[in-house]
Length: 605
Image (tube, rainbow, N blue to C red):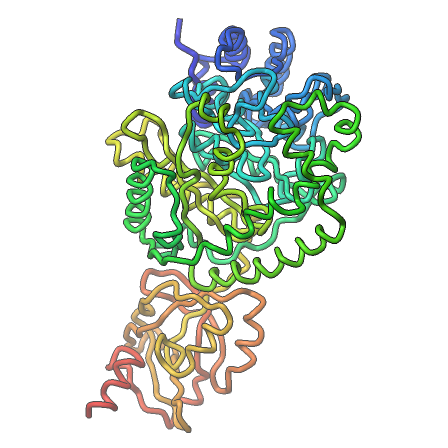
């Protein structure tokens, strides 16, 4: 009999189904048999074999053509509702049985995905280590002596052990990223509000987001396209906005890293080595590294547990906590109990402080496209965490706690193994709504890492196919005169958040003229008739936010205007063109190859 487990990525499973050698029914039967023995404390509740077979038969009846996640098994963190299965949030006394699915769960099931069960977590999603559960400490998939990371511990380990193809977690302070790093997975924390939180037990309702664990960034993107939608039932739901420049697919991009003295590996030399390797891989991909001041990010991170936001964890379960606090395990109870010392004035003052910090941190995005950090500086044995639960858990959140407070998106990416065989991961960070470029770069970085191993193990696709509705909100403009880099009018582009995309030439059927008039002189670029001789003219292609285009075009004087240019590679782009009447008294400078060549001739006659 063919070996069915461990599972691989989504594409590989769909290929097995398409070949006819495997059916969803066979798959769920194998999974059900596998998870009955659960020494790693991954699962809190699993569906019966009969229920799983029912899901499988339903998708088989519908067929692959209509279901993008046909028969793909997934796991659900047990603070997200699955109809008729108790939601415990890892606290049996808190448990309730929902009558309907959480919005994200329903969207996945409608797409053909099959829920296998509910996974273990740090109680009430409070912790980053995976040991704070009455259902047992969830053990690392690579070494059971070590922590799996939390709070979405079981969701990560279920994927890492090949029991499901992807899983849902939640992320308030790093719970969707730290377990990914410790179990060699992609851990994607979307922009807050992209995935509905309707049907999720909140930790900090204003900060929470559903997260995705997967083998590949392409799988995370695939799940995102199914799940992401505005949901009026969630007061924090948001519509997706334009993402701007797709730096993740660009041949050159800029990334920030904390200053060396601000990096913390907590004595782990292996993590430090692997992080430096990740920086080098980013540079090979075309990344330009810039050190940034990480202190404002750390200041924001401290607000999450040392500031008034801990009161939001209390608000989430206030009535239960007041009457059943003894049912809450010790570390979680101690954290939530501290909320009572914060006043309403503290909450407002915290909001003011966060606003001030965000003004500082947002300034870095003028200089970098994304931020690169370790996901966690080190990993600990379960025993060490249990002996020192607060301090070591705080260490785990050094690079993660600030993220949702500052409204950033992030993805954790596998980045190698320590000499002892434990995984290490890095995190890429961007402002909200830049998830698509973020996942593109994560995909390229994952490819680069797997290539260093000599074999991929997973057949990664060449690119991530986002839906056509995805919008960059950018427009490309080709410039050929004083708007070129370093010339007097270039500031009209840079002041509008313009970014240089390419230095190239037009196709070889243009001519360039120096128009008469006052400095700065203007170029007149025209396309010649088919029976006339033209040349290739130097241009730069710049990308501008769409909302800046109007004011830019309004400054263009006659006889110049914006039209369609053809580049040397055959692509077309909007750019400067000149009306034909204006070249009558102009100087033909085509033989200089472009405006720079002409200026050099003027300077050195």
